Image (tube, rainbow, N blue to C red; front, side, top):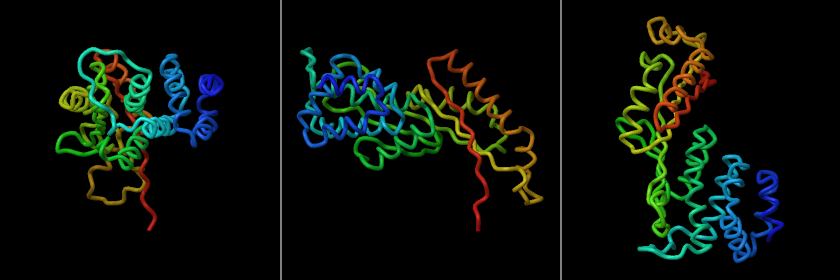
Length: 247
């Protein structure tokens, strides 16, 4: 057991498949390992050493060992058992994924939502473009953090949008994050290559042409750093090049 924990502490990304296979046929062994890692406070070190895909796999592994729908509500003051600590770790992985604020994290959250829609929901509204939300586990009511949903707000803009340089602050940081009661946001800008715009009457081309993609992204990154430093939010601007699909 100690050997498996040390493998994860040393290089979680490289050793995860080996450890997962080691516990695949013995749920009790898996639970002992999970509780040992959570109790020894090495869970955070393991998380930091895993990619977004492996974090998602770790969440699924823990959810198999400790099925969220089978958690029993905990009321009042009580002793935090090793199993409770492992459940905290399980639920905290969704927070860890959302805090990554990366394209890979979004893909993994969507994968988890597709696999377990009863645990996570990804939707779009009239104001917030995309809201990724994972409700709290009903049985892990040990502290305030465990009673709070994991939320990630994604605002999407085209590079031709006249508000592309101000919407990260005016819309995402000042409106959508507070409205969703979230503190992590992704500002996703779609860049369409200028030379592929061939409609002479489309004025969006001239608007998009004003800023080169690298200048646009650098400007948004500086803005995100300023906003994140000034407030209790974490913003991640991303620019995705969208080529014309082949016919």
